Amino acid sequence: MKGIINLLSGPRNISTALMYSFAQRDDFEVWDEPFYGYYLSKASMSIVHPSHEEVIASMECNLSKIIAQIETNAKQRSLFLKGMAHHILEDKPDFLLPWKNVILIRHPKKLIASFAKVIPNPTLQDIGIKKASDLFHYLETHNKAPLVIDSDELMKDPENYLRLVCEAIQIPFDDCMLHWQKGGISQDGVWAKHWYRNVHQTTGFQLQQDRPIDIPMHLGPLLAEAMPYYETLQQYMIKNS
Image 1 (cartoon, rainbow, N blue to C red):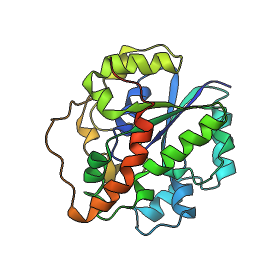
Image 2: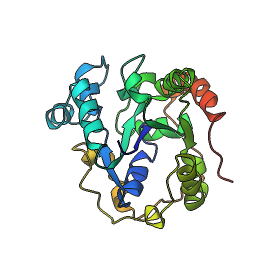
Image 3: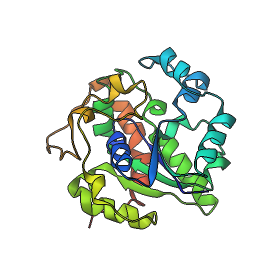
Image 4: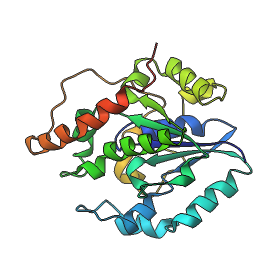
């Protein structure tokens, strides 16, 4: 089997830009949220995701078959799986143990402010940070602690951070990872029209303006819930230095 790099992110966390970065490499095939249809068809949710039925219809939604597809394809070519941590519904997802897992975090205030522009009333489940923390501890107890990276650290100096990430996951860095064509990639899921508008306007990692972030008052309790999980994971993140 070739390598499987499994990115476990929260939404609105430059995970799509990272997928585009890996899509430029000749030695990787990228998959966009392979567990999304499974998640939508199985999870108990209080909100409706955009294109809910279209997403389910476009994807394999049987967990065993999804895993089999991933591992079959990985026999031929290394894979980069861009996914959301909360799409992994199992408490003990042992299928993750042979993969190289990478957890991507972002300060919850920034994540919530961005996510609320599409889904106004997200819950702790929807933003994925608790699940990311749970997955970290599950993998750590099996001596498979995932790499933890932070979107703010990445954006300080994308090239240097990508070099550090590539070194940590034991692949060579490639300059092609820094740039892509405007307008998306063929691997985008059918949900791209709702979530990827900003990244489709980019040709590389875009430095974010450092400005105050405000979230709606009703989401203050969600921020308070999310912070301990973020702070726990932040202790393990790679710093851009």
